[in-house]
Image 1 (cartoon, helix red, strand yellow):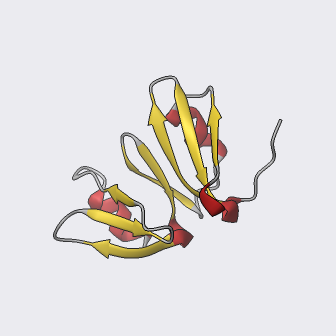
Image 2 (cartoon, one colour):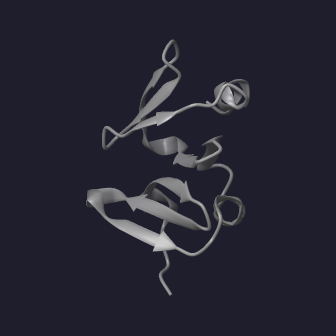
Length: 93
């Protein structure tokens, strides 16, 4: 069992019945939970499900490319913003 601080998590990526939690310092953690289950465990004030396959830490956003529909995180990962979630995401910011 691993306990994580929200500030350690950059984003979570779905892979079917598994999720990869991307942490600071290029560390990764694979969990046997669906993205929906992981999303329910994360605090809403820190995280947002930006796409069907991704949850991001709102405090780790470096840049939002509105015309391209992507978020750039502190580690320079480029995460897509789904059209369905874009307005809710902008309200969160």
